[in-house]
Length: 100
Figure 1 (tube, rainbow, N blue to C red):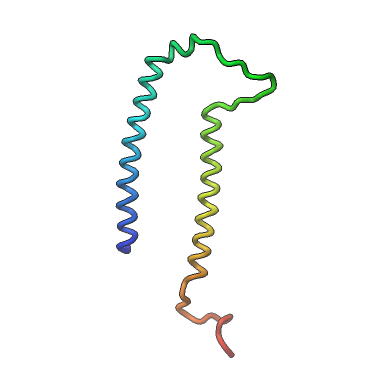
Figure 2 (cartoon, helix red, strand yellow):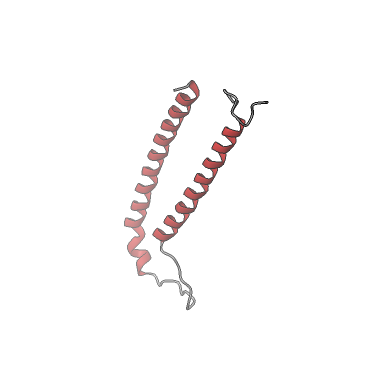
């Protein structure tokens, strides 16, 4: 593994750890809010939605957005690999590049 790969792996690990701790904190706060205010909020009247309007569930919004993000990231990965291949210095002459 190159020094760059080691650096990036270490950086990614540290960032992921920090993000996971922050996410745990957020989830704890959401659960606390739900416990404290959930009953009060459920007693309030629900907003009126116009007839025929389909409001997606939070779960379906999350799934749809992550599906979209995964497709975009995969597209960018393929593009970056293609650029990398285009910029690579050839180590051997191929039949197409040999001069006759």
